[in-house]
Length: 400
Length: 166
Image 1 (tube, rainbow over the protein chains, first blue to last red):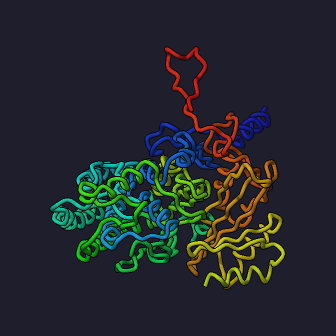
Image 2 (image 1 turned 120 degrees about the horizontal axis):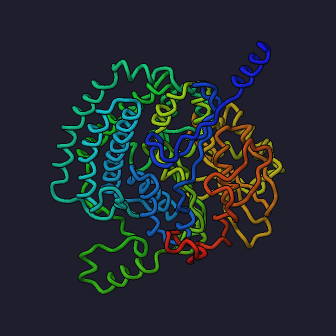
Image 3 (image 1 turned 30 degrees about the vertical axis):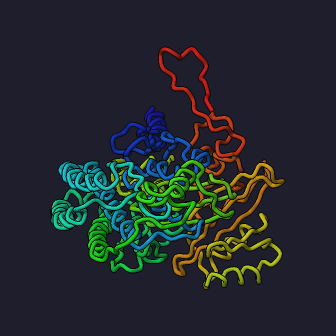
């Protein structure tokens, strides 16, 4: 009898349990579903199931002219829209072999760095909220509002900005732009100090993050991780430095790296990145060149507004460029930039028609999320939300 | 010096390199499918090249060609800051060797290619649909797949067959 009971007990303990997390779990940042195979509280296997937000953006892009694709890029990583805009615009500019004028390049740098801060604020807020530091959520969103107000003032939209255009930016900055950004530069460093006061030495935060979900630098490279994920593991690789675009080589900034590759190191990397972004923003504002905000390439970029109002030819050009688009040469280009999440790249195949033959987005979150099982295997179930937070996912970009 | 990559490749795999394209400062090597694993392994492990980072795997559909699909591998060398693109062309229903044994990060991108184009990868640990539902028919990014929108089902139209608009 006793033997039977023991056998029965063994049967039960050998069994693992399947637990379904999501797709509507508040800590999955959207609609991510994770199938967890559990042995008690220990995770045997974690399988992310994605695709709930798939909207066929890449397919839709094939049916739009090159300029019409820009609004679609906004809708991928919807908390770092300007980074997506920049990656796509740079790819098309590479295809056309044109360059944005210096003022546009500096504006692009300035705004993508502010976007990086906005994106990291979302991350710090939601990540801390998931692990029990509720205060941070409100603080981070309060500061993000400031940045979104600036995006609204500059482009008319808080989130779906579409401000960068092929060959430059949509319009010149408003009067008093500098004052608004200077004010931000004054306020934000204090706020980041505040976050660090709340989090960096917080015992609760340290207990939940130090030594959790570690990944070595070698494994991180092998898994294709990028952005703060790979830098947290000590790999000093940032596309802004290694393959500079949009005159990033003229700016002076550091690339923070971690040592242990755990959640805490990724946290420190991201916080330091926010400070570095402020440094870049200040330099961009100080050195902002005068001149055009849009390259003058007839047939590709729109003519200046004053010319359209006074010259017949400019009006015709304007009309034709908007209606017909432009035909870049045949060829294939790949351009990647350092988005807040990592390497976002656009691979564009052109067949010489006004619509791209194929646009492939290299989504950083997609690849970063694929390492989830490796990060979480063998750890406790309570660590799952902390790990997801530290990957910093945006499902709009993963599913596209 | 990205040419070093191509020089080395040509020296070592002269039979397998079909063409080399330079466009806007980027280098693309069109290679034979059979040599994909060897070339990837070589590029990753060669001490001078060290293409240790796999950026992306994607595919492009050319329905009028004999070999319908092009599979594009985007490799990056973190130590050298170089990028090279490898391309192979495959016919419909022709399997491609999976490079997950070389780069673990190829897992999901290859699944996406399978999902969107229906290209099968040999020796892939878990080749299943990733973005589309498991019971989906067809592969959306193929050029012959129409760009459609499906009507949303509510109570008032649940008995009607879902209408697809083009």
